[in-house]
Image (cartoon, rainbow, N blue to C red; front, side):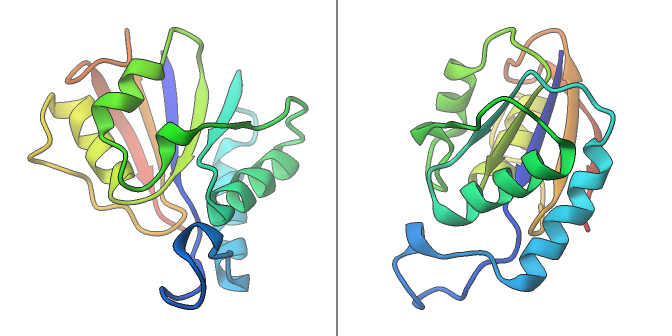
Length: 150
């Protein structure tokens, strides 16, 4: 099974509007497109995204860059403060999929999938793209094949 995890691109500063409504900056859009280039030619079964505006914009940019025909799947279990274990409860054997989310969830999720615990989160910059492989999306059962930052 292959799993891709993408942190949203650079967003407007905190306090500029309520957190769920913060939009991507122009630089953030450029970051996302650079990361999306690594997904060209990669098969995807689905794109799941946080309902937050910057994650939706990120997912839509990737969808358009890849010519991905299926609709984005918006889920409430990819918001910034979601516990990584909750994400694992929602991942099935549908693969490969792309998850578009936020820190601290992204870093914690990558650490949990690799190490089986939350003590070693990955440091993921805006529009950072992680590629994981493993038999199942379980804690400690996946290998980080790459982490690219734009």
